Structure formats: structure tokens, C-alpha cells
Length: 496
Image (tube, rainbow, N blue to C red):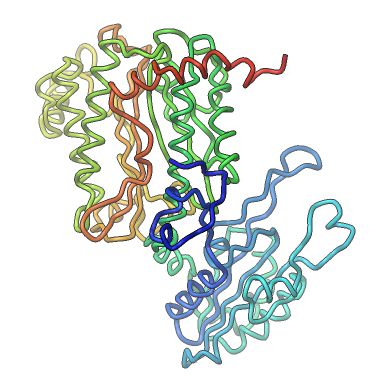
């Protein structure tokens, strides 16, 4: 991969190459967002108004706030980065161009506040840089809303995104003739749009995946016994930022040994010991779009027989899931295939009884145990080792939205189509406290995760640049470059 931090001049030879190949950080243009808003307006009901509100800033401590990240729907429709914003879409009865408009409400320009917290776009910037047909300061929201509602037959507004704006909207809505009108949810439209990624969005996600992959490769190279989980996290997140990512896409999970059996372990404070397997679930957000990668590798550079046996089962399940990803398949199908491979592998190792080769056989065995009076220890189930789904949508949110999403049974049974992007992430987790299995397998947590997007005839793996075969992992960790990185790790990480 070329150096991502170095911009290169695009030539006729590189125009067909991806940003990852050229090293040029991709960006979405203002024209791209204008086209997206046009499509949203097209999907709106005739003679309606739709409103989206920015999530509020959150206090971290006393008078400091967390770094502000706009709500994903606002980013999707406008790319506007400031808090206190409101987007309004008005569509006339005929849907004609002249009767549809995009309205923005933004913070006013304020010289003193801008000295402290940065330059604001203001009303003029909302029009000139963000494509608003009309723009007002946010204190004008109720006045403009009242006039717009008088002419609309249907209103699309989602409560519970910003309590302050909810109260302002309710004052206009309740106690007037408008309250008798139909109140719909604009997210039903925009979330269905967000489910299908365009070529431009996929290019952004491809970059995010490549940056995250580079960070995982670096983690393999620098990790050594005696390091702290947080030090590995710091190396990875520095690479995110160095290559244009604004933030981690979620709180990084860096768990060694038994910590890896905690699905959302985020303390990241333990010492990494020789013999531990390290699970890292960490990835960056670039231009608002998330990537999501999990890899596992031995702190000492070599898998133990038990670690390798469990790892190979998970890897087989993950590769089978990726091989299935294509139009017409369902996420439920991928999950069932991955689960069956995990189940068979555990039976082969003797961690599950042969009665559990199928879900039906497992259920019969558990029913028989209950019928016998539940005597003795409860038989182990696949759920005791694998307790989460295999996939979730990914996009502007790491657990992305979409009508009938991956958290619903309906969404899991929805046929996949080109442009849908999601993770494939089977795992096996054996807690140190699980005394029903041999000691060699305890304290091992394994998850292998990649991001894929459905294409016309299959799927593209957006996170393919980080190795996952056992031989490749051990080769990377034992290479001269890795030894050099370990030798210099103190100078890289610690102030002395």
C-alpha cells in the first residue's frame, strides 16, 4: 500500500485506481450531497415537510465537552459539522422543483465565541458551502416552522433526538390545527437510503478499511510480552489519525488473555503476558464512515495448540461466511453457516457432545436433561461459546441503520443486494472460569471480523489488507521489521 499521508497528483494513469492505490484521501463533494438531498426529496410524500435535528453537545466534565460528532443523518444529508443545527425539507403538492426546498437553521456568527471555539458557517455559509436554498439562525426555527406547517399535509419529525428542539417543535405542533395532521418519521426514508452504499461511499469505506488494516498490522509488529493493552491501543489510534481519520469508529477493544472473552471489554489497562492470545477489535472512522476489524494473535508470536485449534475453527467459519456473501443471500443464512461450522469444530475438539452437531440435536439433549430432572451440570450449548450474531450493517454508524436492520429478525431475512455493507464476525469465547472444558482452552477469546460490501456478482472485502491465516500472523510477528519495531517501542511510546 502506498503512503496514505502523502497526496499525489492524479494523472490519466491513476484516475481508474482506487484512493488506496494512489494514496489520495477520498472526499465527498458538495455536489454529491446535493444529489443525495434531491433523492430524499423525491422519496418524501407530496405536500410534506421533513425535519432533522442535530444531537446536542455532551458535557465531559464541568465546562468541557466531548469532541462533537454530528448525528449520522445530518452528516448524510448535509455534511454540516456544527451543533445546534436543524435541517428542513419542504416538498410541494406537485413535487415540482420550484415547490421543493432545503432549509437550514444554524448558529449565528459570533466573533467572541468563534475566538474560543472555532469559526462558524453562519447563515451565509449554510447557503454558499452547504447548499441551503434558505438559511436562518436557529432561533428563527419556530417562526419558520409555523408558516411551513400551515401549508403541509404531512409532517415527518422524529422525537427523542434532541430534547430541547423537541420542546420547541411541540410548542408549534400541539394545540393547533397542525396537531391533527399525520406525523411520520423521516428516518424511515433516509435509513433505507443509507442502507445502500454508492460507489463514492464505498471508496470512503475502502480507505477507512485500509487505514484500520494498517493499524492492525502495526499492532502485530509491535506487541510483545510486558506491554500494556493501552500501549497497543495508542499505536493503532495514532495510525488512524495520521492517515486522516477523525476518530476511532468505536471505543477500541484490546483484550489479552481472559479479557478477550468479554465481548465489549474497553478497560485496556492490563499487562500482556507471554502465552496470552490478544484480541483487538478496533477501527477508524473516516469522513464519517466506520470500519470494523477484529483480529487475534499470540502475544509471544506463536499460537499454542489449543489457541490454534479454536482459531482455525473461527477462521473457517469467517471465510465460509465471506464466500457466501452475494446478492440473494440473507444474513440469517450466513449466520447459520458460520454457527454450524463453529458447532462442528467444538464437537470435534470435545468441547460439545456429539448430540450437539445440529441445533435440533442440541435442543433435544437439553430437553432430555430437563425431563430427567435437571440433574448434574447443565450440558454446554453453542451459546455458551458463541453468544452474538455474525453480522451487522456498517456505514455512517458502526452498527448502521436500515429499514428492518440486522437487530430484527425481518432484517436478517432480507435478501442482500448490491451496495449493502456489513460485517462478518464469528467468534468463540471460553472464560477462565468455565470449568466444564479442559484447562488448555480456558481464558481464550477469539473473534475474526471483516467488512464486506455486496457487488453485482459477489462481495468485496473492504478490510482485506490485514492478515488472518495462522502462518501469516506468525510470519508478520517474527519478521525483521517486527523485531525492529519491538526494539524501538520504548522510544516510540514512552517519555523518558
